Length: 117
Image 1: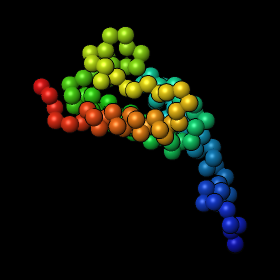
Image 2: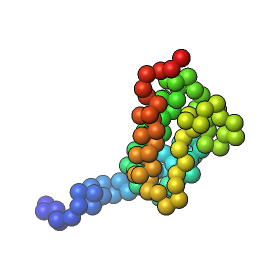
Image 3: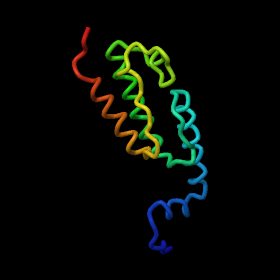
């Protein structure tokens, strides 16, 4: 069988009719996990982009813990965080999720240096 010259994603969907549904389910699950962390994202976003953002957020949280902070005390909605550097950066209006994930990664990198006791 000759496959049409379409994108690899289109071919994958043609070969696996449930692929789109699986990707939407993954996006919904990841968006829910991000919401638990205080982020408002749309499950209509690409699941791979949401997964990248979740990875960046988890890296940031690990860096906060490494520094002795508590991610639950330093939520984006916290009124009295222990350290403003331990609060996940806010997403700017109109900022793409890819750009935001990059800023979160940069913030995590800034916290990952030598631990200050």
